[in-house]
Length: 444
Image (cartoon, rainbow, N blue to C red; front, side):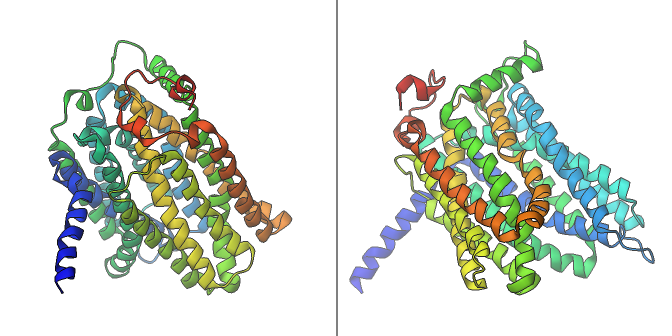
């Protein structure tokens, strides 16, 4: 018994050390607001989908079609892609906090208006398209600013990995809990109620951002004397001059095109044919989210010596779900593969975010983050559109198997690049003093 009593305080001390970043006032405020708004954001897509399929909330009318839903969903994604680069420039000029605060207010107003339109009666598809497009603009402004804000929230730079881990955990928990809560609320009260909740959560996020007291560099923007186009060009130079950054971005972009998009499209088809249909596929995706939560918990308090190498190793987890589906494996095997892939996604996301924030100067971080996000996600819609026709030509199993093999080979190739494999964490915590294309300067 005495031994156990000795161990308990040690475990508590370790846990307290891993959560020490929550002791920093600005990060704590932001974490609470961000986690709250994430929960609402993860609920909203369910509500929007049923709003469209139910015919815009009116009674007595015909429901919307799959084509209508496609238009509405595309109207959200396209503005994000189009606005990302401008969002990075604006955040570097005006300061990330201001841009994110405006984005939360904009998205909260949009969701409140959307809810009001649904409660007023039947909403035409064009109105829903316009509303979700404005919502997408807000998200496109928010994303690059987020990557640039986080380092300014953490005074102790050694806690930056834990900060990114906790934010990743909030995203993972929201991904799992949000749709489940939204389904219950939508069934009981209708989609307008969910959108009202989302509007309130954006308000909480905005309030948290308003209470931050950031240091001058984190709060202020870059030199505004030049043109926005000039700022964009300098951001591109900063991005392209770092081989480790554009190599890992290309890796993620091709993963979304060749692996993840086919998995999302062809996975439900495979589930319908032999994995229990919608219930089986829901289990797969839910367990993927659980794996992401587990991966985030695993990363708390851990700082691998070579973060980019570990992050790339974690991407091998994405080989497993596609390979399991291609092999016609049972639901238990596919679920297990999704669990490991989810854990890998959390590890990868945390380490990539931390390395970018540690090795890119703060005054250009939002622009660099915007190029990284654009490169990672711009090919995703192409993959979603091409997966079905490709499966019609060569079969779903062949498309999924190709994706799994691609991810395996691509991971090996990226690990073979010295600038990725050899970069050590000690270089990151030294800061970004004078760093310009660090890989070719150090030879590592």
